[in-house]
Image (tube, rainbow, N blue to C red; front, side):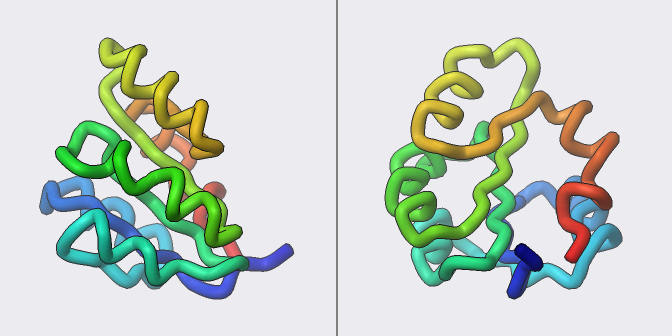
Length: 104
């Protein structure tokens, strides 16, 4: 299934530029804004940001593919995100494969 669009909550400017270089991305200002995702979208989230874990169940329920990245030492956060249906991975793994993850 090809993606419709990429929607992202990535506040860090360096991370944002790396995600934006990999695909045409619509960045949102707040985690709750990810609720506008629809089936076929790819949603990218920085799992270390406040409010992200709380909205993941709602975003996953939209049918969008949700990919999250976080610190490799924050196993609890990565596991909590994965439990919602998010493809949670350490930051290094995400950025090593960001272009493939966001490919149409």
